[in-house]
Amino acid sequence: MKEKFLDRIKSGDLLVSDGATGTNLQARGLDNGMPSEEWLFINPDEIVKLHRDFIDAGADIILTNTFGGSAIRLKSSDDDRVEEVNKIAVELAKKAAKDSNVYIAGSMGPSGGLIKPFGNLEVEEVFESFKRQAKALSEAGVDLIVVETQFDLGEAGAAIKAVRAVSDLPLVCSFSYDRGTKTMMGVTAEQMVDHFSSKEFSDLDILMFGVNCGKSLEDNLSVLVDLRKATQLPLWFKPNAGLPEVNRDGTTFYKVIPNEMASYVKKWIEVGAQVIGGCCGTTPEHLQAIAMTVKN
Image (cartoon, rainbow, N blue to C red; front, side):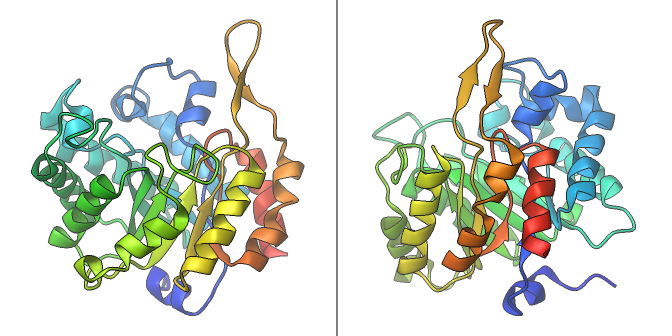
């Protein structure tokens, strides 16, 4: 019987999360500009195959293909499919993880817009959008929920409150520091921790703080160090394999090779990362190199 994710984290176990979803699906034929959620309907076998490739590479955790599965994010296509999108994504992840002890993490990415006064979204609208997604993921049977690639305290706060309005599952809050050691809204790791450690969020039981995506491996490591200084909560860490570069034919690639990425793993563990995976550009080959280092 699979041990509960919460118990594994509390016992201090090191776990390996999966790699990138979007960039790997693009490498496998997903059209640029097409939401990866579309493949849940038109190419589900490839979604299952990517999950299995990461499991075979050593992942203990796989994230559902629901990064853009909130009502606001789906509005440009069909927001009436929120429940269906999230349910199917969880079913495909479960199919890939069948007969294993792999944990299914419900991925909740940013809304794709900005809350007023920086954009046109109302906080209540964002809250309801995330609440609907979190409910669908929880009812479909994920083991944990990851509010990921966040950059704005207001939106991330709405997402966290939305999850807790419908679920008591283990909750990870992970920010993307794409300006090096700050998010696109200028938020530092220390500011993120201070905000979500305040009285407003003290009873919402965030299990882990995290970093996913950003710039270089060095910048991601620097943020991880800042995060460890700011909190004693367990840390979730999924750095990207550097920044994308463009080939002459217009296709993108990531220059960081698997062994180079894996060479950082011991340092990540020393700093305090407990769940380690990869974000954009992290292939199953990258993850295998990471997992071998973590588990050896």
